Image 1 (cartoon, rainbow over the protein chains, first blue to last red):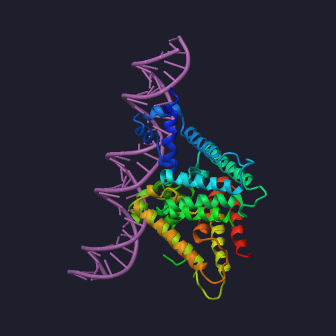
Image 2: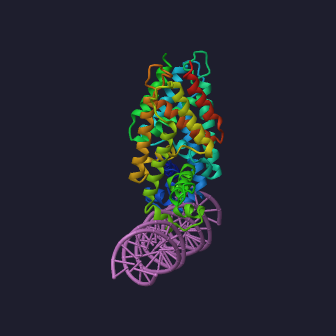
Image 3: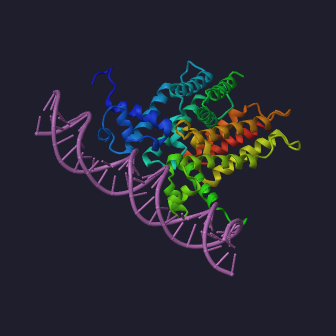
Length: 184
Length: 184
DNA sequence: GTTTTAGTACCTATCGATAGGTAGGTATCA
DNA sequence: TGATACCTACCTATCGATAGGTACTAAAAC
């Protein structure tokens, strides 16, 4: 397959990511995915034999994409405020992309009910994101006195609030609040 | 039925609340509820004809219970810090009760996929909670400079983080952070 | 006082639909 | 030939919901 063509596997992951973010793990079936791609559900099984495989792959890809987008948490040429801006920007972008919640908030909220591999992948998402944030904010410039847990919680919660209320302003307000704190 | 006996209707609501908080709206079936109460699913339909009816009733009861527990947001004999403590305490208690997320965060995260009446009830939960918080913090003593949206977002997000990570410390940390801010 | 009615609260049986998954098959290509 | 990537057909299981039924009770009607 060409470099410019999205593989079928990635197409499935795209649909699944969007579907899980909108409706949760049980809210999207293999048949839904198949229909969206004009194929049959057995073919989805070909790429991902069990739903747990798919869920895990979706979360891992989402995790890697986010951390790639965030970049290094300790690059010498930037401030903590720069990094915090990038984190907040990633959340804004994720909301804008589909008016939906963060994948791992949706899944994490019902974590104990998830298949084990998916649960572990969600756990790793948060561990890595919190570590990134702690590292990003551990420099000398004290961009904010809020902890990494607090920032991630606020962003995740604000995203859900905006989805629940159908209004981006809640996330915007919290995002501004977090980044303006870094200016004060 | 006696005042000390829980009605069948309330038993169903209890099971549904717990089930939805743990597994989301699609994660709990009428048959699950029936099995938990040693009855048949048609009997659940007797009390709540459609799943939408049940979802709405669960959210409304949850909303009323929380706001009752929070009490008046503007009683003269207390400080803003008292009220913030009460809000944070309610979240702590909710987590402790079942190691699960806030009902309306779980539902709100996938709000557009919910039946309309459930979605509206979730919307009303957040509207009322934010209004309560704004009112509680609108006195002269400036207990915190965080907005109501920020506080609710942080608490909701932290609760989900604790569920996802299987560790109460995340919620504890954010809760302490919010209430210690009010002391400074 | 007895019978009828209406309401409550459950049940059995069933429907159509959906869901994860499997076995066996076909077509293509290197 | 083997690998890849799809398909048909089917399985078991589950789900929201419905129709018709039973049992009980209190109140109304006779």
